[in-house]
Length: 148
Image 1 (spheres, helix red, strand yellow):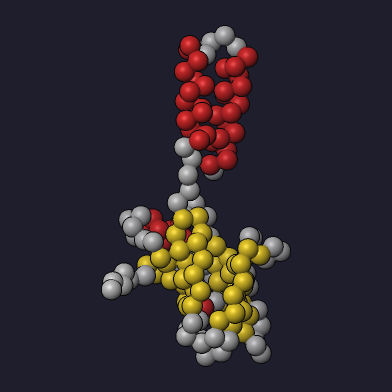
Image 2: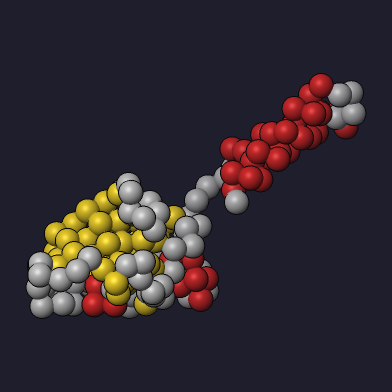
């Protein structure tokens, strides 16, 4: 979505550059501000191993898990945290337990962030919610704030 907007603005900027109707060059200022002010908001996803066995979790770039961006081996009761962009609608994770078939855990990161009123900084995904691939999407819970 963000790349589409940036591409459209760049095309309009180039059109304004070659034409004489650029409103005194203001369109160039707006495009430059739009391109350089784009920032992504990240949220931390905490993957909790609430199963009874050691688990290997892989974060995938797509539902086929052809390429991975993270991997963690978690003993029972442990967790791993990874930062992900809020703009990603679904984050895919593969969950492998010894002696069981491969399972998937697609987390609806964007929906969970939106439902939290854009206040969530940590979302919790429980590995016991993984289902046979391609998996049923899961809405992660907002982590409770823990103070000192």
